[in-house]
Length: 377
Image 1 (cartoon, rainbow, N blue to C red):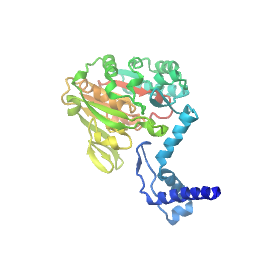
Image 2: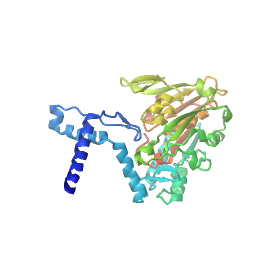
Image 3: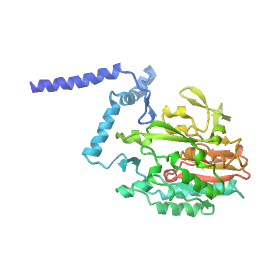
Image 4: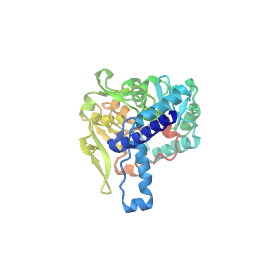
């Protein structure tokens, strides 16, 4: 009797999930993993004969499996709380924060990246004010204190200074703390960057607008890039963005490639719809990455004009994604800010779009970017 019950339960599970797989609607996006899910592949003679259909169908089944998110969460809970596995796939949970281990120090990559930035500065920015600031990842505050592997930050900065020390250094390590970062994400919280923005402005000798003039806007339910990867049931974050009279009046353009030509546009495409581009784009909060609210996410080249600025100074920021949320806080101190992400555009193309004359130059990169080789172009 017991064997029959076991077989019956097994059959119900197998056939039940099989039926559920085919009758339930496919999900277009995984909000927790912040990625698009595989769709049903086309079945035709070419894809079947080549074997591509079965390969794509396997991926499709893995992405669309019934209760997939629940099983991922159960697996993570068992590993973390029952098996006491401190990290899974390089992700760990400590002090209420999800994070990813950044280890070991890739000294050759740091050398290469810092030397590359120095070479670009010497070639393009002669006679201009050049500054550099390194953004510590939150493991700087979290990993060592909780017994996780971490890179040697002192050696990291020694290498950076050896290559970039000829320029003005703005130290951000002592104005940041763990609470200045999202609990579920790698990035810093804009609402926590008052003293970080002040440190940058002091270093570049400009005056920021009053912090008290900002209006705070809160979007709830932000799931950062670690939330889905770790799959642990951690409370979501609030995403706060700050506006003032400078962000409200700013004009934002981004560079795109169209018909094999680079053109500037003041719009962004979201889920097939064209939306006006602005300093903040709240509609993008429900997309793959909620952090795209800040300057529409990953963009190779952007310009922000501030018609009501009280100065005519200009700033060019060579940045990664952290720059999207700090740049708006500098508006008003500068009448124009250009943001360049040289992971997505070759530095050799920049003279086609920028007349390098008397701008301030800021290299603003996070530790994980400079610790990886082959990213900068």
